[in-house]
Length: 114
Length: 115
Image (cartoon, rainbow over all chains, first blue to last red; front, side):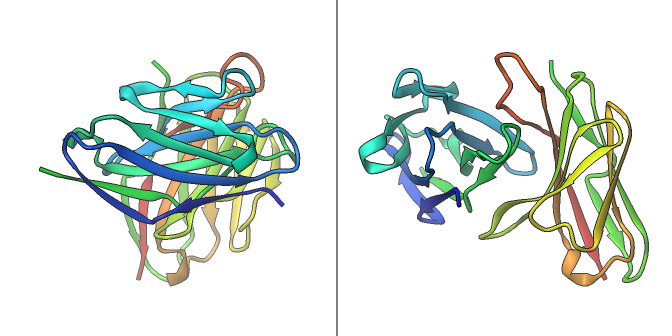
């Protein structure tokens, strides 16, 4: 079965530091992968997506993610954290049982220390 | 700008009540989804609809039903609310084709408390 595993339910970094949120996926077919962000008291919004084109994907707000097939990973990074990045981040994979469905990871809450 | 709206941000209901959660999207999307979000569990799909009057069970459909009479509206129904249905409920929509085909657009969520 397809799944995504997010390592670390909570990550805390200092403002200006590198942000690294880890995601590993399990899929027997070439995956479509996503990162979504949920700011406090809001719904989710798409940060970026990988759909088998370039392996380095750039998203909104300075985030990017690299698809590494050999490591089955799709980690999210940002060079310099900002206070406004505090949110919950979800990695997700398209379900091969239905092109419209997405399977979400359990989420990682990112905190930013001043 | 794409928009998914949910009828309530916060809702408090009593055990045994019938509860309706409404979701409306203005993007003419074919697909609509209901998820529940619980800490440490991420988002779990309750039901999915790919067309008017068409629905498909998700991973946790027990205790829920849905209705889609119009393309823009997707309702989640708790026939007899129970305390273990206390959760955040998120509605989403996505198109069936085009560049955004794999992207889901979410509403702000309804935090339901069943007492």
